[in-house]
Image (cartoon, rainbow, N blue to C red; front, side):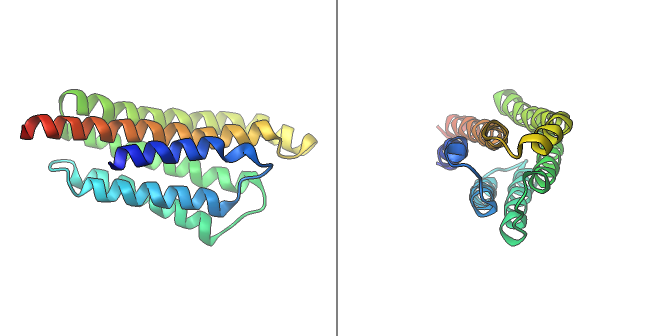
Length: 172
C-alpha cells in the first residue's frame, strides 16, 4: 500500500508546476508524507529495516526543513533536495548489501536514480543561474524541479511494490 501511495505522491509532484510557483509547504508536505510512509513500510522489513527507515526519516526531515524554513527563491530550495537525494542514495546503496534478487536490483535502481537526479540538479544549477538572472524562475525550470521529486517518488514506490511482492511470495 505504501508503494502505491508514494507513486501517487509522485504524480502529485509532477502536476505541481501547473501553477506559476511551487510553495515550500507543498514540497515539504509531499516529502513528509513520503518519508512517513517509507518509514512505516520499513518497520515491516527484516534485514534492511534500519536502512529503509533511515531513508524514510531523511525524506521526512527534508520535508520538515521546507515547511519550517520557507524560501521565496528557487535556488535555496534546490540544495536541500540535492542533499536529500545524495543521502538517500548512500543509504539505499548500503541496503543493497543486505538484500538479494529483484529486491536488490530495485533498491540499487532507486539509489542510482536518486544519485543521478542529484547530479542532474547540480549540473543544471549553472545553467539555471543564468536563466533565473535573466528571466526569473521560468515555468520550465519549476517543472523540471517538480519532475525530480516525481521521478524519485515513483522509483521508490516501485521498489516498495517489488519488496511487498517478494515478501508475499516468501510467505505464501
